[in-house]
Image 1 (spheres, rainbow, N blue to C red):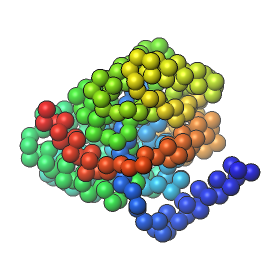
Image 2: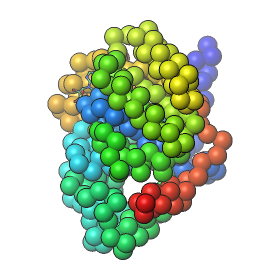
Image 3: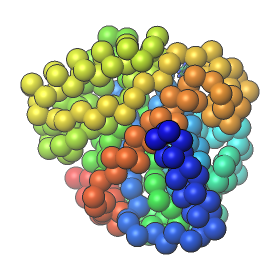
Length: 292
Ligand SMILES: Nc1ncnc2c1ncn2[C@@H]1O[C@H](COP(=O)(O)OP(=O)(O)O)[C@@H](O)[C@H]1O
Ligand SMILES: [Mg+2]
């Protein structure tokens, strides 16, 4: 009964948001998604979470900041003409490079091969910053997909965002790499809290077990609080959707993985921070990181 009432409330909220009744009260939430190990499902989480959040009435922009292997567009089956590189070079504005994805989400295509952010010339950096500023009032959530490993660029996006989602699979190597990120976050005092998603699990139980172990170790040794957002089951529909270059949330709305991601989206909205620093905070931190 409670679930039904909650869903009705969310549907009303979504309808209101679509009609533009709800004015943006809070700053945009900037959330970076990172994993350490590659191939654990970051890009799939980002894209499908964006769709799930859109269904809950949020305006979501996905930024493909995997500068080495930008592939959000591939999973969405889009063929963007331009990317961040054109913004950096001053050929296009952010509005001109943004493309519309399913269910109202927007994508900022990453620049494959774009050199590390640290290597940008001063005027290129300024251009990127000015263009990012324009996002503040056009979205509620900016989700940033990053590359594997802990490169300087990945670390910059982790530090600059208000929130960090770390994703891992049950594989020991993935867990070790995810833990590596959390250690760095703690060492440099970047975030007190880190959100966790466990992907490709057998069942809910396995997700909870891994999250609990992860949380205990993090709390004991490095004083970082882990907020478990949920797990995503290993699901062949995900693989099928990737092959068809469509997000599983839209192609297979009844798939187990779609249900799991919708739960994660609801949890993410439930634990929204009191205050966010919005795009301006994100930009000032990003530019500080780049200057170092
Ligand atoms: N929940 C899942 N169930 C089954 N396969 C998955 C799942 N999540 C990811 N995969 C597989 O892993 C591959 C890599 O996912 P991707 O999102 O591109 O990872 P990353 O961005 O971390 O490199 C996908 O193409 C898919 O085949
Ligand atoms: Mg990826």
